[in-house]
Figure 1 (cartoon, rainbow, N blue to C red):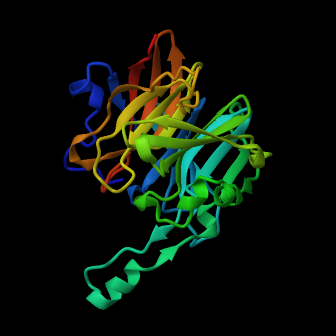
Figure 2 (figure 1 turned 90 degrees about the horizontal axis):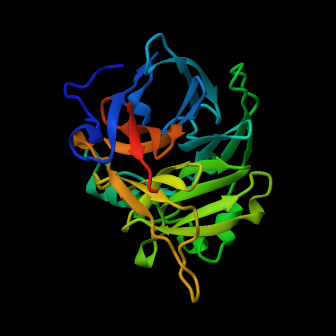
Figure 3 (figure 1 turned 135 degrees about the horizontal axis):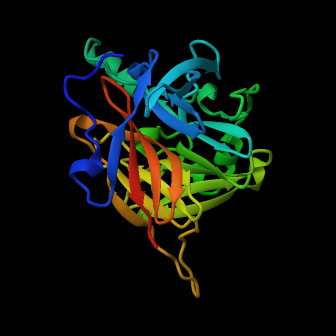
Length: 324
């Protein structure tokens, strides 16, 4: 893994935000490829799981000899060679790993070495690939490290039939279309957070459902100042959320606390707003894409944030004071 010429990302708490601190960079050993755009991360005991939005494999690491060192042990293919699983989020709960694809459509990129005519044609091409629309579940034993065979479902039917979300189905993800980028598990229930769509008045949807019965889902909504969800982590009370732009804008990226309750207002109902804990943007253009909980202590949480850069993938461990 080639190191960047400048230290990116600079841990945000160390220099910019008095609330988020104690930042320490993790060392990822064993050929972790930054070119795969890692965006999903989960910590389970002595095991760290990474997923990429341009690959089809789940990467499994274990603790190294030094603190914050992690060594690649194996790769698990979730899709066929040549297909993109578009892994955007990883979570663990009740003995299972959950790996979520974005379920998104994408518009083809234009290329400078093509003719104007060909680039205009590419601009009209929107693709919806089945391999990107899967949610995987794998049995995992943290004590032995044994990982079971993957079982998968798709949320496509639910997304296409939902009275609200169906309006955004087929719209490219970077253009406020459907884009699942965060997931976590609490007491056997999954919470899937959307980068897009972001609705009027800045409402962002989350889908709450059991893996074995996605038809029983419920949509919740949270307001994050016009940004979408990049990842989430369940706490003892509430959730931590990374929020960022719906499109390819460089940032900012922010960390929020949300109580887990739907924020749609109504007569006789009190809604507790989400609390912005601080910015986790970085110099050099690194994007905060993944989030996992290390530990929760009285009044604070220890987390790992995964950053995507053009040159190297970095993970940073930091301390976050929680609201009282």
